[in-house]
Image (cartoon, rainbow over all chains, first blue to last red; front, side, top):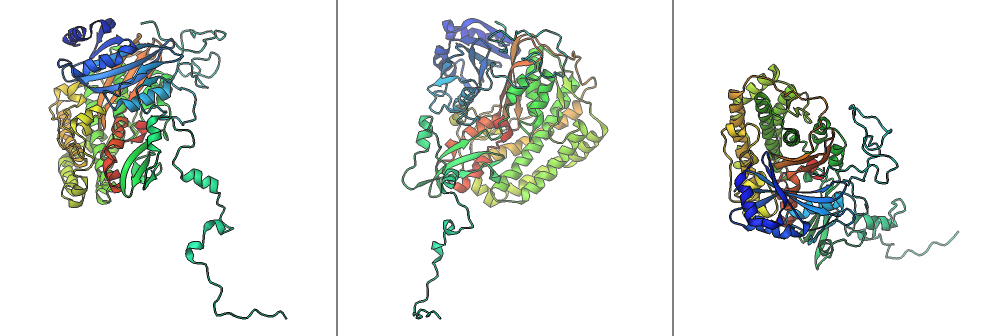
Amino acid sequence: MDRTLKRRLEARLGAQIQGPIRQRHDQTEIRIQPGDVPDVLRTLHDSVDLRFELLADLAGVDTGNEMQVVYHLWSETSPDWLRIIAEPLSREDPRCPSATFLWTGAEWLEREAYDMFGIVFEGNRDLRRIFMPPDYTSFPLRKDFLLPDDAARSPGEGVRNVERPFAPAVVADDPAAGVRRAPAS
Amino acid sequence: MPTRPARTTSRPKQRPPEQHRSEDDPRIMLDRAVSADLYEPIPPYPTRTEREAEFYTIGDGEMFLNLGPQHPATHGVLRLVLKLSGEQIVDVDPVLGYLHRGVEKICENSDYYHVIDQVDPLEYASALFQEWAAVLAFEKLMDVEVPPRAEYIRVLSAELLRISSHTLFMGFLALDMGGLTPILYSFIERDEIVEMLAALTGARMLFNYFRIGGVNGDLNHEFMSRLGDWMSRAAKQTEANTGLLNENEIFVRRARGVGVMDREMALRFGVTGGNLRASGVPFDVRRAHPYSVYPQLDFNVPTRLEGDSLARYLIRMDEVRESIKIIDQCLNNMPDGPVMAKLPRLLRPHPGRAWGAVEGPRGMLGVYAISDGTDQPFRFRIHDPSFMNLEVVPHLLPGNLLADTMAIVSSLDPIMGGIDK
């Protein structure tokens, strides 16, 4: 854990950070509003005491209640990975500003997040599906996209090869049945 | 008797060869509409983005060429749509997804132990690294302490595999440039390493060897005797193999100054691994974010400034030498003890998030795992280095000749299994 990174982030970003900065193992985590993404990334990339030059990863996440875009950054000024969670994005119309103005390489990562979650990155000039065929209409990694043999999510169907000692959390008549939701944390 | 027509001096002329068209031949069933569909690279749907529209608008004297997805030099099922002007490349549009299996979705629907064998076939030339990234993320998620002997065995087997992967890279790079000999020597090396690992893990390619909290089995006699045999001549053999290419004027001239990527460009594209270090950024996860026992090992991170195909090749050959050093140290420092931590049969980590990244042969392999307290990962994100390395291709190729395509693409060393997930 890098305590100085926490202080530097607080000094540079201030009010743009939502909630506490969390640190665990070699990761520092901040949460921001999706609208602040360009500002925050620009500050992290350009500040002389931060210099987060490498975009290690960009991932979409569907928590079941909302969407998130998660960035992992690397800087030679810190021994920690920096994780930025941009949330909340609505599940009906998830939109997030693109990071391609800073890292051209984010283009394909955003295409992948669009392909899998339907998150629209505003400012990405090549936002089309990357793995699935062009006439495909679903977003496979969303939590309401169930596998046909997904026994864990459809009680009474299929066989599980690991004992399941707890009752399924969802009821079949519930309109939201089958959607796996993350805890509120 | 019918009168014969008077023979004229001019015999009925044979059709000139250009008029023998296949559509006149009743034996050839040629559907014009189908053939137009097959050979027309312009998408049959309205173009979806600005960039796609720009790419599929053809200029004066330009043509499209589909390279792949079955072309032997594309390292798997990659399709490159090239826009050519004469023999010069104007623009490239890589088409992915021919190998997409939805591994992330499968992992989110299998429990923590099963994830390890699901991720194996991603980077099929170096499967242990992808396993390592997954178990590293899970160990962070569950705060598992790995026994030191297991960590040393992990480093030992992974560095062996790195050598195998880099040697294979050397052979395929030469093969794509038309040199047949190096691939034969690569496969000799690779076969010895793979047999060695088969003695250790039981499999030649998809090992399924790492476990959360350790490895599947301890070192055994056959592995050690094969390793001892190989180590006695590994350094010498590496020099001999690299000599095949380093001293080959045709290879050096074709690779030097081709596909140049400078420091800023490499960082802007998120390129990692040897490709980034060939552009002058000393980013190696083993040093930048030390994991396992790498902080206790002595090795260098080779860096070059040229950023061309030749530099990317030379960096990897330097890494082979460093890996041999690491293996030597592992054998000298290998502690005694168990190779597995004690863990319950059913893993249900507390809700949380973890990012684990390791340095694979092609760059940083990362896994972002989210737990929601059940026995399956809630989100399992795989970051593959080949995906990022391939993204540079449309920006490296324009301006080069068609013949240099493979000299550039294969110097970036993409593995389609990892790219398409």
